[in-house]
Length: 448
View 1 (tube, rainbow, N blue to C red):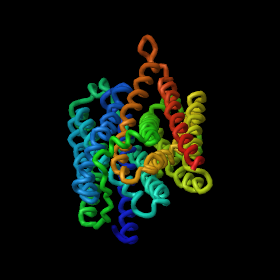
View 2: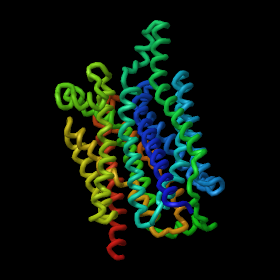
View 3: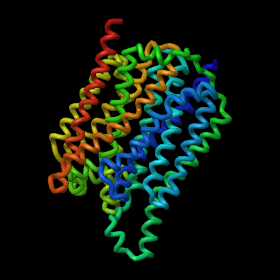
View 4: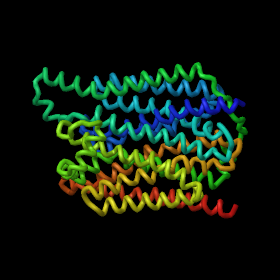
């Protein structure tokens, strides 16, 4: 066991990891509308990006648990960061060659590295100190994760959505020289941010390679997974993680497209408050000088920013309200905001859906800590199963995209402009289940 100073140092370095994977995860969301335009994909096809990204969590969560038992947390973190760095470098040839399958491979590899970090970091943070303050530490770490998700849409709007993507007919009308210049510009807009991220990840891997971290791995029983399946409350938590990540990613991935359906771009440009807000979110850029998608993408920052603010507010409220009860309340409020959004129009609908981010805030760390409660030496294996449930970010957005495609076109194949509204309404079921899980944990706390 390490000293308290070592614990504080380890916690400080781990918060950097939470920031990085939050930033990268949301930057992936920014690529969805970009790739949809570049490859002229349907909603269902474009969300294959998220399917590949979050599908890796399902494939690598349990193997990551076994790997950590063999090599320990420190080497596991170094391996995870290195894999993420290599994956970011894959975006360079993917952008140059413009092959969709290379992008998918890069996303899958990137998520494999993040999975290893997730399995290691979440339970590790809970062990860096007293058990009574474990939930508080995890919420604080997740606040830095939210800070990364706050900055990512700005980077996405500036680098990935800042210029207009031409359709196939427009490209064919260009001269050969113009085509070469256009493709080079398109590639560079994707290559630059991911190469920079790769260098940062390799630097972090080097730092963690030399940093001495406390060894806190708990020896898990051989029949640990069999024991976990006897804990019904834990299994409810696994499903809650599945539902939460799926709903959060579904909304985050399609926000720009949803704003397009709402036709709010003219309202934003004609409103001095909204245009100034967009310019501020784009770090002072004049919105008349950037593509409409960048303007709409800038408001996605408010979705993830709300999650960061909500975690600090939620941490304060937990001093007076049980975490299970607060989770129930936030789940019901998120459901309410979606209903308001899909039944309203214009900027009212836009800000209502953005408000869902505020209520998403406490969900992941609270569900995670409540699910681990009372599992003792089963926590490491339980963490693997909880991280595996992040695969909800692959399946639920795919279902959401399919619903949007199905209800978003009429009998003649023309857009009805309402596909995502109907699809988002289905996400109310996810948040209602999360509220139910919070209610079950609230009852347990009350009984105790």
